[in-house]
Length: 90
Image (cartoon, rainbow, N blue to C red):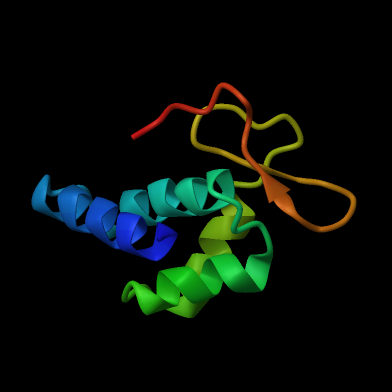
């Protein structure tokens, strides 16, 4: 299940002393890459992982790019988020 994978990834990042802001960026990217593509769903997953919902929503907007690359994402006309095909895996 994707939630378990995201929880394990967050725990690994925290253990590696990655700051919470950067962890949120990685987790948002992983949500989108794994089919969690609506804003409320993405924010909901991060909240369930212990992140602040307002901060998660701001991160979702801050990482939005017209031409996403790396750990950033885009949003299609239907409102769903997507990651670039060459998105780095973590």
